[in-house]
Every structure is written in structure tokens, then in C-alpha cells.
Amino acid sequence: MGANPASRWGLRVLGLGYLTMLLLIPLVMIFYKTFEDGIGPPLDAITSPDGLHALKLTLLMVVIAVPLNTIFGVVCALLLVRRKSKANPVIDAIINLPFAVSPVVIGLSLFLLYGTGGWFAFLGENGIEILFSVPGMVLASIFVSLPFVVRETVPVLQEIGTDQEMAASTLGANGWQTFWKITLPSIRWGVAYGVVLTTARVLGEFGAVTIVSGSISGQTQTLPLFVEKQYANFNSTGAYGASLVLALLALITLFAMNLLKRKEDA
Amino acid sequence: MGISVEGANKRFGDFQALDDVSIDVPDGSLTALLGPSGSGKSTLLRAIAGLEDLDSGQVTINGEDATAKPAQKRGVGFVFQHYAAFKHMTVYDNVAFGLKIRKWKKQETSRRVHELLQLVQLDGLAGRFPSQLSGGQRQRMALARALAVEPQVLLLDEPFGALDAKVRKDLRTWLRRLHDEMHVTTIFVTHDQEEAMDVAGQLVVMNEGRVEQSGTADELYEQPATEFVMSFVGEVNRLGEHFVRPHDMSVSLDRDDGAEEAMVQRIVALGFEIRVEFVLGDGTEVWAQLTRAELQKLELREGQIVYLRPGQTKSFSGDVPPPDGDGASTPQRRDGGDDAEVSAAA
Image (cartoon, rainbow over all chains, first blue to last red; front, side, top):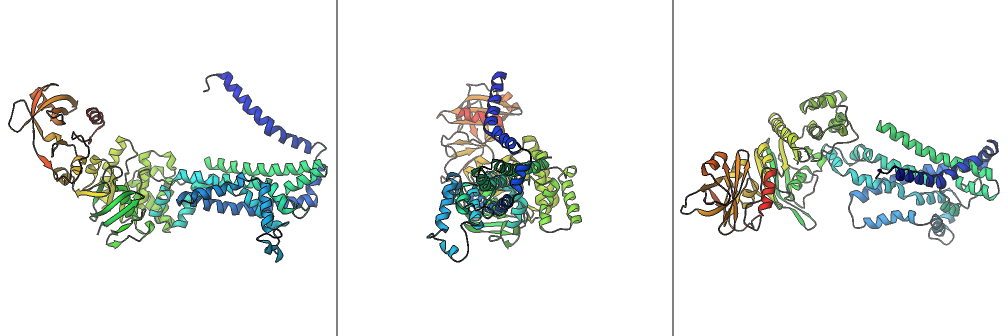
């Protein structure tokens, strides 16, 4: 493999070049453009009432959707791996749906379900607003980010096997104790990785949320929607500033996990 | 008292893992469940522990019906082939696990854990993680963990199966001594007949989900109830309907009434023991176990014609099919050297 230094260097340059062109340069451009006219304009955009509201709403989505999907994901992974059933492949495929279906389609399906004439339209008629309000946006966020924790947890559960859990039960632990003291600590890195991906997905969700929220400034606008609105209104600096905040939030999530992991390995 | 299983049945899909199995394990004994893989021995052990539900049958532990009890309430210590160490816990926390579940006080837990770590000779390693231990050390930790909660019975599932030969021998001796000190009713599963005979006082031989025979090592060797037991516990030649141990074959150079004519095919020196392979007039292959002195006296060479007289033979009623179809020597062996011999002869 690494016998020929020329080809080794060639591969390295190719790989790094690819990453630089496709990932690094666009992100650096955002950074550069944001601060092109100093720190004032982007700061103004973000600290405007609409901008702050969008930031709060985005964090609210994360705070609601991530824990729910984490609990669901772990329970679902446990069922898929530990309870063998003929329905498992079907359940598995359904869980993957949000990966396969475009977020716009997901948003549209929610719209049909909760909108006028939909099956659940009675909710809105009875004063429980789903569409164009926070509940609908939460539903959309949960939908699009549902598979991550399941997908990251299933292989880890398969790898650890059932010996440790059985050993715990022979030592007197009940199912609940076994889960908290043995299973969860053993799968925590898989779950953590799933949580990071879920968080990143919820932070950045655009398509589904656009449709169900109506993107009303100061009311149902998350950060990605705010970015789009600023951009459409020719306020590029505001758009860049908000984008940068989004990117920073995602980076913080990733670094937080790396830090935890390093602490664990030490 | 002790452990008893009555009429245990267990089916996995099309596979009958346990077929009406009943065993009795006396209180305080050290019993081996011996059999080839797929014989149901591990399933039986797990059923006793409550890790596997029986389709029908009853498990009694120290006089109490345990059939419906979950594993956590059976008071068993279980040791797994691959240790089942809690990887995210230190050696100390592994051993303390059962005590913490039982809400022991910190001081008492600490005293008990260190007592056990001393017993399994891991006292200096309490702060290590399982990944920092060798296989033998991990298995001793698993044993300490199982013993910490003072189980009524100790169940070991191929406990030395994943260890190398030297460590396995040491742990065998050590387990036997431990049992002499603790007197806890112990069952261990193995596919190695030498290991079973070395460690256990009582043996239960299993095959195809059934118990073939139980008894002491001597009883099984001297009075095997079935062809399977005879061939599994020790080595055997088959002569028509008769079975004979290779060390019960007498070799003579003189024609003799009732002796079979045979040609020496191969002479293999295995240290003190000499293995001589013969082919009979009808093509059957057999072998005899001789000492070095016997061989020198006979001055055997390959290709020579000799006369074989089986000493003690055994025959079994024909309801059990022979383990292998060609009627030659059985695939039982004691060491790696024999392995190649048998496959070469087959």
C-alpha cells in the first residue's frame, strides 16, 4: 500500500484538495464575507429582535427534538437488536424514511395532515395550532432528525452482545438497573454521536420547517429561515452573520463531544 | 438439595437443544457437563441459571422450584466463556457490582471485594480496567464477581475455553482447590474430556440434547453405557460389533486362535506412548497403544504381519448409530499429534 511515496502523496493531495474545494473554501468565504465591513453589521443583524428570536426558536427546537429523538432512538434500537421479530426489517426501513424522503415532501405531508381538510384538522379548529406555529415546527424537526440515534446505536448494541447484560442479571440486577448500569454506559458513544448528528440536523433544518412554519419573522422563523429571508431581502451581511452563528453552534456541538471523548480515553 | 432438572425440553426453531433431560447434582459437588458442541450442555446450564427459558421441565435449586424465577432471583453465580467483563468498570467495580445492587455498605463492600481479589490473586489490580488484564486475569475477575454475592450454586460455561493451554491447566487446578475450600455446588460445561476428568468429581455426558450417562470418571471409562460415551470418554477401536480401547489390544507375532491377522501400517512414537496403526484383512483400520518397552520387545516394523487379540471388548445394542460410518478408529484424541493421524488414516 504505502510503498510508493509518490502515489501516497498524490492521494493525500487529492483528498485534501477535494475537502478544501468543497467544504473549507465555502465556509471560509462565509467567515470572510461576514466581517468584510467589520463586526458591526453582522452583529446588528443577529442582535435585531427578529434575529434573536430566530436564535431562541432554533435552540428551542434542539431542546425539544433532541431529547425526544434520543429516548425514542435508544428504545427503538434496543427493540430492533434485542427483540428479534419478523417485523424488524419493516420497522428498520420505516425509520430510514426521513433519510430517503426530501424534507420538503415531509413538510408538505405534515401540511396535508394538519391543514384544512386534513385528518388532524380538528386540532386547529379547536384552538390547538399546529401549522404556522411552534408545535408544527417541532414535529417537522423531530421527523427529519429521527433516524440518527437509532442508526448510531444499533451497531454498537450488536457489537457489545448480551453477555454483560446476562452477567448483570445473574448478579441480581433487574432490567432497569441493567439498562442504566451496563447497557447505557456501554453504548454511550454511539448514542452521543447520534445526539450530535441529531442536533446538527435540527439546527440546520430548512425545507420541512419552511413549509409548516410559513416563516413569519419574529414568530415562526428559525435561524436557517432567518438566513434565507435576509438573503432574499438583499441583506447579505445579515445572512452571513446568522450563517456564522449556525456554523458555530454546530462546531460547538462537535467539539463538545470530542472533548468528552478525550476525557474518557485518558 | 443441590440442583436437579426434571424433563427439560428446549427447541430453537427446528433444532431440539434439550430432549427430555433430567440431571441431579448433589449438594456441594463439582460436576462437569461434557459433550461436543451442539449437545445441549450450554443450553442446560443457562436454563439452570435462568438465562434461557425451558419449553417444559422443572429446575430445582436447593430444594426450591426455580423454574419460574428470573435469573436475578436464582442466587446463581455464572461465569461466561468470554468473561462478560463490564468493560466500563474497574476490576474493583466489577467485583463490587452484585454487592452494590444488594445495597451493601461501602466499608463492607470494600472488605469483601478485597478479600475476593486476594482469593483470585488480583489484589494489586483493583484499579485496572478489564482491557488492561490478560485473559486468565479477566476470567479470575469474573469468578470473583460471581462469588462476591455468595451464590448458592456456581455455574461455569466453558470457563477456560478462550485461554491458552498453559493458563487453562493452571486455572483448572486452581478451580479444583477453590471448590475444595468453598464447597459451593458447582457445574461447569466443557467439551474437553480430559479437563472434565481432571476437575470434576461427577460427569454428565451429553449428546444431541440428551444425557447419555452420568457418573464418576472411572465409571464412565470402565462401564460406558453407550457407544457414544465409550468413544467420547477415551479412545476406541471398532471391530465389527465390538469396541475396544487401544491399550486393551494385545499384539503377538505368533499365530493364535481367535486372534486377528493384521498388517502394521504405521508406527508413531509419542514420547512414552507408541501408537501402532494396523489394517485388518477386511480393510478395517485399528490402532494399539503400546509402551516403548513393548515395542522394543516385539521389534515391529511397518509392513509386518502380526496377530491382534482384543482384551476387554464391549458391545452395545444396535439402537445407537456409530459415531462414524467407516467402522475405523473413532475421532477421539488427546493431543494435537493424533489429529493429523486420524485424518490421514480416514
